[in-house]
View 1 (cartoon, helix red, strand yellow):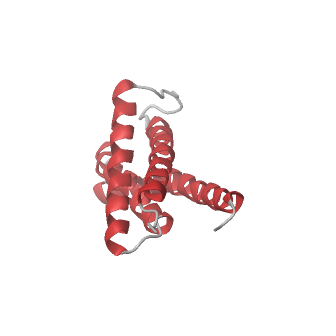
View 2: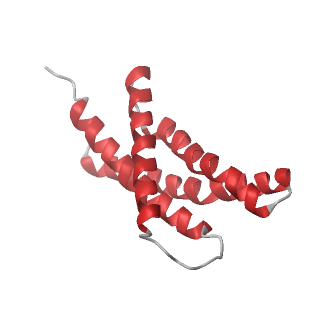
Length: 134
């Protein structure tokens, strides 16, 4: 059995990677979409959903260490949970930074908090539900 401290350190490192993915991916994807469309507003509109879902998919593939079918199941659960928490946070206006006129940083901060909460819930559920039985 692994020491709990080692597992916690690995998860913290992975959550730092998630932070980098959640902050950088929407920005890069939105910039590409702005260049493709030639319009700031429509480029940001087209880049929002891929910018939010792509980091979750990449993180899920790195974070979840299970056989194929349970891995896909937990990744989908994590993405849906993240999206649900994110949508709730945006609709309730829980984070309003006012740092920019488009609300990009509100989107990123809400996505980051929702992502960390969702993936920790997925980790806790998968570690408890998928324990090998003796």
